[in-house]
Length: 328
Image (cartoon, rainbow, N blue to C red):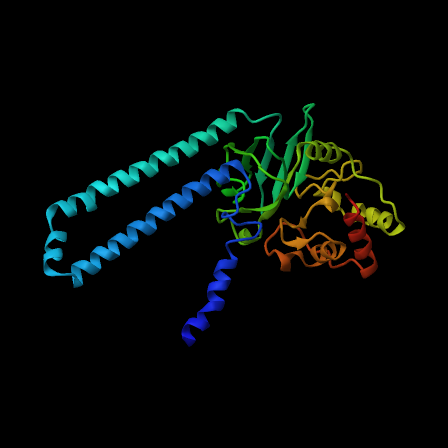
């Protein structure tokens, strides 16, 4: 009894992984719902077959002699060991192909301009195709309209990455030199989480992003705001931070539309203050998070390509953080 009680915390910890914003068991997209049905079907069949095999094994070892004789008959081996696996696995293969074909059909009816997501080291470049052909550049966060299939072009400019948003659909690899297409359709508003699902280097585990599903009208309004240049700093400390941002060469790697900063090596920061996280899902989006990243980014995400700006005084660091935090 004591051993059973001691195992309860372990079981509780395991069950806690079945929920949350990155759980594949809580589908919030059309493709994820189809995958969920397939998963539950396979799981149920696996349980039934496991119980059947264990029961037959127990009867073969401990059952009456007459029953054991019947179990050892050739037809039992033929049916249970050959015919049944062929039928079950063929049915599952057919069902899986139907699910894949449904995904291909959604790709054909994807509405409007799409989105290009490029895997970097170790962050995501997200480019929306605007209705007038304009490219709207963002980073480390994806927004989707509810009830509308949206085609994602998945690319990489370094190693193999893999995009996986478990609550919305299956994963798809990003292969150097290729452009793969994944179509997602959110079924309800909310926030979920995506992750790079292919080992891509030291900070692979810290390459994530939030996926925000919005009602179509809210999505269109957000996209219109995202296309606008950055708002001018409204406070004295933020204006000082904007000046320091340019003086310290940050604009050589980062872009802030509407300013002299036009870099493309690092993430676009035009509206960075409106995102749900910093550093590809690693830090909370707040002034303290910006300050920590600027000074300790190699400690937070070892191996990333940004240098640590330890030469900034506490006052200058606070000013730059205030400026970035205000870029909404």
